[in-house]
Image (cartoon, rainbow, N blue to C red; front, top):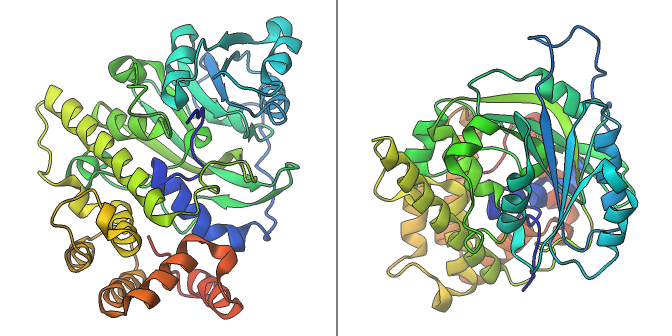
Length: 399
Protein backbone atom coordinates (compact mmCIF):
# COMPACT_ATOMS: atom_id res chain seq x y z
CA UNK A 1 0.00 0.00 0.00
CA UNK A 2 1.54 3.35 -0.98
CA UNK A 3 2.45 5.65 1.85
CA UNK A 4 4.65 8.68 1.89
CA UNK A 5 4.70 10.01 5.42
CA UNK A 6 4.87 9.15 9.04
CA UNK A 7 1.75 7.61 10.51
CA UNK A 8 0.66 10.19 13.06
CA UNK A 9 1.61 8.47 15.80
CA UNK A 10 2.21 5.23 14.25
CA UNK A 11 3.81 3.75 17.24
CA UNK A 12 6.91 6.56 17.57
CA UNK A 13 9.59 7.32 18.33
CA UNK A 14 8.42 5.56 15.42
CA UNK A 15 5.19 3.92 14.69
CA UNK A 16 3.97 3.71 18.28
CA UNK A 17 5.31 6.57 20.26
CA UNK A 18 3.74 9.33 18.27
CA UNK A 19 0.48 7.47 17.96
CA UNK A 20 0.18 6.48 21.59
CA UNK A 21 0.85 9.94 22.88
CA UNK A 22 -1.75 11.40 20.56
CA UNK A 23 -4.48 8.94 21.41
CA UNK A 24 -3.81 9.45 25.11
CA UNK A 25 -3.72 13.26 24.96
CA UNK A 26 -5.84 14.49 22.06
CA UNK A 27 -9.12 14.50 23.93
CA UNK A 28 -7.61 16.78 26.56
CA UNK A 29 -5.14 19.08 24.86
CA UNK A 30 -7.00 19.74 21.62
CA UNK A 31 -9.53 21.75 23.64
CA UNK A 32 -7.00 23.64 25.77
CA UNK A 33 -5.72 26.81 24.05
CA UNK A 34 -2.14 27.79 24.82
CA UNK A 35 -0.12 30.95 24.37
CA UNK A 36 1.64 31.25 21.00
CA UNK A 37 5.33 30.47 20.64
CA UNK A 38 7.73 33.02 22.10
CA UNK A 39 8.67 35.77 19.62
CA UNK A 40 12.20 35.89 18.28
CA UNK A 41 14.27 38.86 19.45
CA UNK A 42 17.42 40.11 17.78
CA UNK A 43 20.52 39.02 19.64
CA UNK A 44 18.95 35.81 20.95
CA UNK A 45 21.31 33.57 18.99
CA UNK A 46 23.91 32.00 21.29
CA UNK A 47 26.55 31.91 18.58
CA UNK A 48 26.29 34.59 15.90
CA UNK A 49 25.19 33.71 12.36
CA UNK A 50 22.58 31.01 11.80
CA UNK A 51 23.66 27.74 10.22
CA UNK A 52 22.45 26.96 6.72
CA UNK A 53 19.33 24.78 6.67
CA UNK A 54 17.72 22.43 4.18
CA UNK A 55 14.01 21.81 4.77
CA UNK A 56 12.85 18.55 3.19
CA UNK A 57 9.06 18.43 2.89
CA UNK A 58 7.77 14.93 2.18
CA UNK A 59 4.34 14.69 0.55
CA UNK A 60 1.91 11.97 -0.44
CA UNK A 61 -1.59 13.11 -1.38
CA UNK A 62 -1.43 16.15 0.92
CA UNK A 63 -1.82 18.79 -1.79
CA UNK A 64 -4.45 20.64 0.25
CA UNK A 65 -1.99 21.06 3.15
CA UNK A 66 1.23 21.52 1.18
CA UNK A 67 0.95 25.32 0.63
CA UNK A 68 0.75 25.91 4.39
CA UNK A 69 3.90 23.84 4.93
CA UNK A 70 5.89 25.61 2.20
CA UNK A 71 4.64 29.09 3.10
CA UNK A 72 5.46 28.58 6.79
CA UNK A 73 9.09 27.88 5.90
CA UNK A 74 9.33 30.82 3.47
CA UNK A 75 7.93 33.12 6.19
CA UNK A 76 10.83 32.25 8.49
CA UNK A 77 13.19 34.23 6.23
CA UNK A 78 16.23 32.14 7.18
CA UNK A 79 17.39 31.46 3.63
CA UNK A 80 16.18 27.87 3.82
CA UNK A 81 16.80 25.52 0.93
CA UNK A 82 13.30 24.04 0.48
CA UNK A 83 13.20 20.59 -1.09
CA UNK A 84 9.75 19.12 -1.68
CA UNK A 85 9.57 15.39 -2.39
CA UNK A 86 6.35 14.06 -3.87
CA UNK A 87 5.97 10.30 -3.48
CA UNK A 88 3.72 9.71 -6.52
CA UNK A 89 0.65 11.51 -5.23
CA UNK A 90 -2.61 11.07 -7.13
CA UNK A 91 -4.01 14.46 -6.05
CA UNK A 92 -2.87 17.97 -7.02
CA UNK A 93 0.37 17.90 -5.02
CA UNK A 94 2.63 18.17 -8.08
CA UNK A 95 0.64 21.10 -9.46
CA UNK A 96 1.04 22.84 -6.12
CA UNK A 97 4.78 22.22 -6.23
CA UNK A 98 5.10 23.63 -9.77
CA UNK A 99 3.26 26.80 -8.73
CA UNK A 100 6.17 27.75 -6.45
CA UNK A 101 8.64 27.92 -9.33
CA UNK A 102 12.24 28.39 -8.20
CA UNK A 103 11.26 29.01 -4.57
CA UNK A 104 11.54 25.26 -4.02
CA UNK A 105 13.54 22.34 -5.34
CA UNK A 106 10.96 19.80 -6.55
CA UNK A 107 11.67 16.07 -6.46
CA UNK A 108 9.16 13.82 -8.19
CA UNK A 109 9.62 10.19 -7.18
CA UNK A 110 9.39 7.79 -10.19
CA UNK A 111 7.43 5.33 -8.04
CA UNK A 112 6.06 5.28 -4.52
CA UNK A 113 8.84 4.48 -2.03
CA UNK A 114 7.32 5.51 1.29
CA UNK A 115 8.63 7.75 4.03
CA UNK A 116 12.18 6.41 4.08
CA UNK A 117 12.54 6.66 0.31
CA UNK A 118 11.29 10.26 0.40
CA UNK A 119 13.83 11.09 3.12
CA UNK A 120 16.60 9.61 0.94
CA UNK A 121 15.52 11.55 -2.14
CA UNK A 122 15.47 14.84 -0.24
CA UNK A 123 18.77 14.13 1.49
CA UNK A 124 20.43 13.53 -1.88
CA UNK A 125 19.61 17.16 -2.83
CA UNK A 126 20.26 18.83 0.54
CA UNK A 127 23.29 21.04 1.17
CA UNK A 128 22.48 22.64 4.55
CA UNK A 129 24.39 22.30 7.82
CA UNK A 130 21.04 21.49 9.48
CA UNK A 131 18.41 19.20 7.95
CA UNK A 132 14.73 19.59 8.82
CA UNK A 133 12.29 16.91 7.62
CA UNK A 134 8.83 18.48 7.61
CA UNK A 135 5.72 16.41 6.92
CA UNK A 136 3.54 18.07 4.29
CA UNK A 137 0.47 18.18 6.53
CA UNK A 138 2.39 19.97 9.30
CA UNK A 139 3.73 23.52 9.34
CA UNK A 140 6.30 25.70 11.11
CA UNK A 141 5.06 28.05 13.83
CA UNK A 142 6.01 31.73 13.39
CA UNK A 143 9.63 32.10 14.50
CA UNK A 144 9.88 28.40 15.32
CA UNK A 145 12.49 27.34 12.78
CA UNK A 146 14.58 30.46 13.30
CA UNK A 147 14.61 29.85 17.03
CA UNK A 148 15.56 26.23 16.45
CA UNK A 149 18.50 27.27 14.30
CA UNK A 150 19.62 29.67 17.02
CA UNK A 151 20.08 26.64 19.26
CA UNK A 152 22.67 25.17 16.90
CA UNK A 153 25.89 23.90 18.49
CA UNK A 154 28.71 22.30 16.52
CA UNK A 155 28.94 18.63 17.42
CA UNK A 156 25.30 18.27 18.55
CA UNK A 157 23.56 15.81 16.20
CA UNK A 158 19.88 15.93 17.18
CA UNK A 159 17.65 18.77 18.40
CA UNK A 160 14.21 17.97 19.83
CA UNK A 161 11.40 20.46 20.21
CA UNK A 162 7.76 20.26 21.19
CA UNK A 163 4.90 20.87 18.79
CA UNK A 164 1.43 22.38 18.91
CA UNK A 165 -1.55 20.34 17.86
CA UNK A 166 -3.72 21.86 15.16
CA UNK A 167 -6.86 20.81 13.37
CA UNK A 168 -7.50 20.68 9.62
CA UNK A 169 -7.98 24.46 9.51
CA UNK A 170 -4.69 25.15 11.29
CA UNK A 171 -6.27 26.24 14.59
CA UNK A 172 -3.73 25.60 17.35
CA UNK A 173 -4.42 23.76 20.58
CA UNK A 174 -2.32 21.73 23.02
CA UNK A 175 1.29 20.54 23.11
CA UNK A 176 2.85 17.35 21.76
CA UNK A 177 4.38 15.56 23.54
CA UNK A 178 2.72 16.86 26.72
CA UNK A 179 4.96 18.67 29.18
CA UNK A 180 4.62 15.77 31.62
CA UNK A 181 6.77 13.71 29.26
CA UNK A 182 10.41 14.87 29.37
CA UNK A 183 12.22 14.77 26.02
CA UNK A 184 15.56 13.02 25.85
CA UNK A 185 16.36 12.82 29.56
CA UNK A 186 19.63 11.26 30.72
CA UNK A 187 22.17 9.19 28.80
CA UNK A 188 20.30 8.64 25.54
CA UNK A 189 22.93 6.38 24.01
CA UNK A 190 22.72 4.08 27.02
CA UNK A 191 18.91 4.08 26.99
CA UNK A 192 18.88 3.07 23.34
CA UNK A 193 21.39 0.28 23.91
CA UNK A 194 19.69 -1.01 27.07
CA UNK A 195 16.00 -0.33 26.38
CA UNK A 196 15.71 0.29 22.64
CA UNK A 197 13.97 3.68 22.96
CA UNK A 198 13.97 7.09 24.54
CA UNK A 199 11.16 9.63 24.62
CA UNK A 200 11.34 11.97 21.65
CA UNK A 201 9.06 13.61 19.08
CA UNK A 202 7.84 12.85 15.58
CA UNK A 203 9.33 14.08 12.31
CA UNK A 204 8.34 17.74 12.30
CA UNK A 205 9.59 18.35 15.84
CA UNK A 206 13.21 17.38 15.10
CA UNK A 207 16.30 19.04 13.61
CA UNK A 208 19.30 17.00 12.46
CA UNK A 209 22.93 18.01 11.99
CA UNK A 210 24.40 17.13 8.59
CA UNK A 211 27.50 15.71 10.26
CA UNK A 212 25.30 13.17 12.04
CA UNK A 213 23.18 12.19 9.06
CA UNK A 214 26.31 11.56 7.01
CA UNK A 215 27.06 8.68 9.41
CA UNK A 216 23.65 6.97 9.12
CA UNK A 217 22.08 7.82 5.75
CA UNK A 218 20.63 6.51 3.51
CA UNK A 219 17.67 4.80 5.15
CA UNK A 220 16.50 1.32 4.19
CA UNK A 221 13.41 2.44 2.27
CA UNK A 222 11.67 -0.94 2.47
CA UNK A 223 12.08 -1.31 6.24
CA UNK A 224 10.97 2.26 6.89
CA UNK A 225 8.11 2.90 4.52
CA UNK A 226 6.49 4.57 7.51
CA UNK A 227 8.00 6.51 10.42
CA UNK A 228 11.44 6.91 8.91
CA UNK A 229 12.38 9.33 11.68
CA UNK A 230 12.21 6.36 14.02
CA UNK A 231 15.38 5.01 12.43
CA UNK A 232 17.19 8.33 12.70
CA UNK A 233 16.42 8.96 16.36
CA UNK A 234 17.36 5.36 17.16
CA UNK A 235 20.89 5.56 15.78
CA UNK A 236 22.05 9.20 15.75
CA UNK A 237 22.41 9.47 19.56
CA UNK A 238 24.92 6.60 19.38
CA UNK A 239 27.28 8.96 17.54
CA UNK A 240 26.97 12.16 19.53
CA UNK A 241 24.99 14.39 21.90
CA UNK A 242 21.39 15.56 21.58
CA UNK A 243 19.62 18.63 22.92
CA UNK A 244 15.99 18.95 24.02
CA UNK A 245 13.89 22.11 24.30
CA UNK A 246 10.40 22.70 25.67
CA UNK A 247 9.80 25.47 23.13
CA UNK A 248 7.33 24.68 20.34
CA UNK A 249 8.73 24.80 16.81
CA UNK A 250 5.98 23.45 14.57
CA UNK A 251 2.41 22.24 14.40
CA UNK A 252 1.26 18.65 14.45
CA UNK A 253 -1.89 18.62 12.34
CA UNK A 254 -4.61 16.13 13.21
CA UNK A 255 -6.98 15.20 10.40
CA UNK A 256 -9.07 12.35 9.07
CA UNK A 257 -6.65 11.22 6.36
CA UNK A 258 -3.88 10.12 8.68
CA UNK A 259 -2.98 6.48 8.19
CA UNK A 260 -2.94 5.58 11.86
CA UNK A 261 -6.52 6.77 12.34
CA UNK A 262 -7.71 4.47 9.58
CA UNK A 263 -6.30 1.41 11.34
CA UNK A 264 -9.26 0.20 13.40
CA UNK A 265 -7.77 -3.28 13.84
CA UNK A 266 -5.79 -2.77 17.06
CA UNK A 267 -4.04 -6.11 16.72
CA UNK A 268 -2.80 -5.31 13.23
CA UNK A 269 -1.77 -1.84 14.34
CA UNK A 270 0.24 -3.28 17.21
CA UNK A 271 1.97 -5.77 14.92
CA UNK A 272 3.05 -2.93 12.63
CA UNK A 273 4.53 -1.22 15.64
CA UNK A 274 6.35 -4.39 16.68
CA UNK A 275 7.80 -4.92 13.21
CA UNK A 276 8.97 -1.31 13.14
CA UNK A 277 10.65 -1.88 16.49
CA UNK A 278 12.39 -5.02 15.23
CA UNK A 279 13.95 -2.96 12.42
CA UNK A 280 14.99 -0.24 14.85
CA UNK A 281 16.58 -2.71 17.25
CA UNK A 282 18.54 -4.24 14.39
CA UNK A 283 19.77 -0.77 13.41
CA UNK A 284 20.78 0.04 16.99
CA UNK A 285 22.84 -3.15 17.18
CA UNK A 286 24.47 -2.48 13.82
CA UNK A 287 25.53 1.08 14.61
CA UNK A 288 26.54 0.30 18.18
CA UNK A 289 28.74 -2.53 16.92
CA UNK A 290 30.51 -0.10 14.59
CA UNK A 291 31.68 1.80 17.64
CA UNK A 292 32.31 -1.13 19.95
CA UNK A 293 29.39 -0.23 22.23
CA UNK A 294 27.55 -2.97 24.18
CA UNK A 295 23.87 -3.64 23.47
CA UNK A 296 21.35 -5.58 25.60
CA UNK A 297 20.44 -8.99 24.21
CA UNK A 298 16.67 -8.35 24.30
CA UNK A 299 16.08 -4.64 23.72
CA UNK A 300 12.31 -4.92 23.55
CA UNK A 301 12.08 -6.46 27.01
CA UNK A 302 12.82 -3.06 28.58
CA UNK A 303 10.91 -0.85 26.11
CA UNK A 304 7.54 0.10 27.62
CA UNK A 305 5.97 1.19 24.34
CA UNK A 306 7.10 -2.03 22.69
CA UNK A 307 5.71 -4.03 25.62
CA UNK A 308 2.42 -2.18 25.26
CA UNK A 309 2.22 -3.25 21.62
CA UNK A 310 2.97 -6.83 22.62
CA UNK A 311 0.14 -6.67 25.15
CA UNK A 312 -2.29 -5.33 22.54
CA UNK A 313 -1.24 -7.92 19.98
CA UNK A 314 -1.69 -10.75 22.47
CA UNK A 315 -5.02 -9.37 23.73
CA UNK A 316 -6.65 -8.84 20.32
CA UNK A 317 -4.99 -11.38 18.00
CA UNK A 318 -2.92 -13.93 19.93
CA UNK A 319 -2.85 -16.30 16.95
CA UNK A 320 -1.06 -13.70 14.81
CA UNK A 321 1.39 -12.52 17.48
CA UNK A 322 4.89 -12.39 15.95
CA UNK A 323 6.90 -13.42 19.05
CA UNK A 324 6.89 -17.19 19.69
CA UNK A 325 6.33 -18.23 23.29
CA UNK A 326 5.27 -14.75 24.38
CA UNK A 327 2.43 -14.34 26.88
CA UNK A 328 0.55 -11.60 28.71
CA UNK A 329 1.99 -12.77 32.01
CA UNK A 330 5.53 -12.47 30.63
CA UNK A 331 4.87 -9.01 29.17
CA UNK A 332 3.42 -7.80 32.49
CA UNK A 333 6.42 -9.13 34.41
CA UNK A 334 8.83 -7.36 32.07
CA UNK A 335 6.86 -4.10 32.18
CA UNK A 336 6.86 -4.01 35.96
CA UNK A 337 10.63 -4.42 35.96
CA UNK A 338 11.24 -1.35 33.78
CA UNK A 339 12.47 1.73 35.65
CA UNK A 340 12.07 4.79 33.40
CA UNK A 341 14.12 7.87 34.18
CA UNK A 342 12.50 11.05 35.53
CA UNK A 343 9.29 9.33 36.66
CA UNK A 344 7.34 10.30 39.78
CA UNK A 345 6.33 7.86 42.49
CA UNK A 346 2.66 8.37 41.69
CA UNK A 347 3.31 7.45 38.07
CA UNK A 348 5.24 4.35 39.10
CA UNK A 349 2.32 3.29 41.32
CA UNK A 350 -0.24 3.96 38.58
CA UNK A 351 1.80 2.01 36.07
CA UNK A 352 2.09 -0.93 38.47
CA UNK A 353 -1.70 -0.94 38.98
CA UNK A 354 -2.32 -0.76 35.23
CA UNK A 355 -0.10 -3.69 34.39
CA UNK A 356 -1.47 -5.74 37.29
CA UNK A 357 -4.98 -5.16 35.96
CA UNK A 358 -3.88 -6.21 32.48
CA UNK A 359 -2.73 -9.53 33.86
CA UNK A 360 -5.61 -10.31 36.22
CA UNK A 361 -8.73 -8.97 34.49
CA UNK A 362 -10.83 -11.19 32.20
CA UNK A 363 -10.00 -10.96 28.51
CA UNK A 364 -13.12 -8.98 27.57
CA UNK A 365 -12.53 -6.34 30.25
CA UNK A 366 -8.84 -6.14 29.33
CA UNK A 367 -9.68 -5.50 25.69
CA UNK A 368 -12.23 -2.82 26.58
CA UNK A 369 -9.69 -0.94 28.71
CA UNK A 370 -7.18 -1.15 25.88
CA UNK A 371 -9.76 0.16 23.40
CA UNK A 372 -10.39 3.15 25.65
CA UNK A 373 -6.67 3.74 25.95
CA UNK A 374 -6.06 3.57 22.19
CA UNK A 375 -9.21 5.43 21.08
CA UNK A 376 -10.04 8.38 23.39
CA UNK A 377 -13.29 9.16 21.58
CA UNK A 378 -14.81 5.94 22.89
CA UNK A 379 -14.05 6.66 26.55
CA UNK A 380 -16.97 7.33 28.87
CA UNK A 381 -17.06 10.83 30.40
CA UNK A 382 -16.11 9.63 33.88
CA UNK A 383 -12.94 7.97 32.58
CA UNK A 384 -11.92 10.98 30.49
CA UNK A 385 -12.42 13.25 33.52
CA UNK A 386 -10.40 10.94 35.74
CA UNK A 387 -7.58 10.85 33.21
CA UNK A 388 -7.42 14.64 33.12
CA UNK A 389 -7.43 14.78 36.92
CA UNK A 390 -4.62 12.23 37.14
CA UNK A 391 -2.43 14.13 34.69
CA UNK A 392 -3.07 17.63 36.04
CA UNK A 393 -3.31 17.07 39.77
CA UNK A 394 -1.35 13.89 40.41
CA UNK A 395 1.27 14.22 37.69
CA UNK A 396 0.46 10.76 36.39
CA UNK A 397 1.15 10.17 32.72
CA UNK A 398 0.91 6.53 31.69
CA UNK A 399 3.60 5.46 29.19
